[in-house]
Image (cartoon, rainbow over all chains, first blue to last red; front, side, top):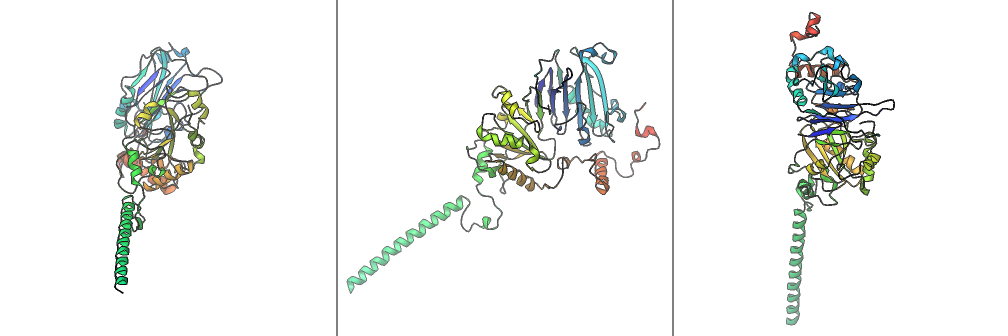
Length: 162
Length: 282
């Protein structure tokens, strides 16, 4: 079981998952860590919330992203929840929760604060019909995530695909 | 007269001994060549079905690859070869300090792992070529990944200078140990459909490497004419491929429905209300 960690986020990847934890470069202001995980090859060029990736999913795949927001979000009502959900339920997923509505898929999104950092966890199932099979697999990932209080210093230059 | 007969007889005997010795020597040579797999009159070779030098493939299986390992070891051999071992996930750092894990078993396509170093002179050509995978003409669906040693053994800025951003670069000393990499450059080809290594070894130049990957794809029954990621998604289907149309699209949709347990006549195919389509919209 592979383990990756960067920018104050760690993940012990369940079998079949791959992932990356990165900070997208920006010339206009600070950006914050993003962690993406999937049961299929994540393309080199992909949006933070999976655009460019979710269209490649098969019905048995899952995709998830843990997206950190800026400190100005701390204390707001949207991030009032403390800690990520311990486990997701099949009923948490809906085809209407997708950022990009693709037929057959469904998604869920949670906003919360963990270790003093505001996050959004967004997950997509390749098949809403198979949610009872896919959600337990996703929960393996959710329980394998770790967040520390502060992200270490970020390097300045990074390739675009990171 | 008697002396002439004696001399002639003696000469015939000597020549006979010489001929017998030559025949025996020739037989020894043929036997040795046969044992090496290149024997004259070898019925396997005559049938055109064998690749020579199985001994080199065995060397790679043990991880004790010689410095100039034959590049043919990267391709599957016709004869049953010992298993090359598991293909674990590659996990490490990117040259920019981010984290990256690449699973080589979550697709049906081939993954070409190129173990390179920043200071290795013979790696330079592979850095350049693999950094622009679109020019390589690898089989469709083949994923190239460059793996260097971790930041403890490599200089990230040197690696970053060689990374083009078009192919993932993972810095992981653990991966080198897990894949038993003897030195750089070294290549491992993994078949995602079976989750196993299908070849490993050294190639002398990029052309050889590409040729061997194409042969491996051909041997596993692939079709190089498949476009884009279609090959990568053979097993899982590709329902959202906008390039699909007509019967192909219909077949892809049927495949997805069957995978989800929805067969012809299923009530979910005939919704009567919006709630049937979006059961959780309220």
